Image 1 (cartoon, rainbow, N blue to C red):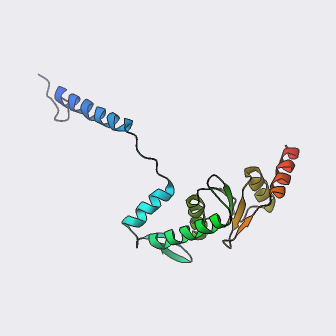
Image 2 (image 1 turned 120 degrees about the horizontal axis):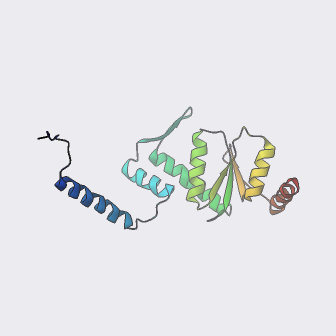
Image 3 (image 1 turned 90 degrees about the vertical axis):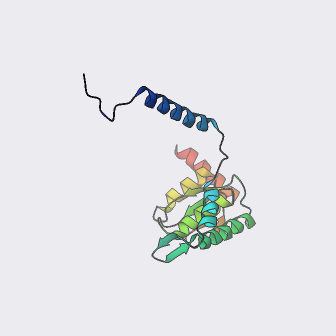
Length: 163
């Protein structure tokens, strides 16, 4: 008679596994409410307000401090006319906490961000921002500069001619 291994599955184990798998599938059909990155940030601020959120050469920000800055950026963008569905160019050095604050601020304003690294050539920035038809650009200084409609149209025409 062959020896049975303690790890060998019994018919009962297989039924239990099938039931467990079905429960997972049943939960997968449940509709979960959509969450944005900003929603996740808000929940994290509520749960861990004083925990370190971002750290770079300029120091650290707690989640509470990060959220305060994100709200400031979003408010200034809204005051400048940026709204839901707009695209905002971001031209900042990679890896800086100001970059992350600005990205989150743009998202909190309901807009989409279009990043171009500060080290990239100006021509690339004009091309990317023109094709994306950004409402304006936030630079390393944190300033939002609206883009004139005629400049965006001219850049789009230049792009079409180059193609």
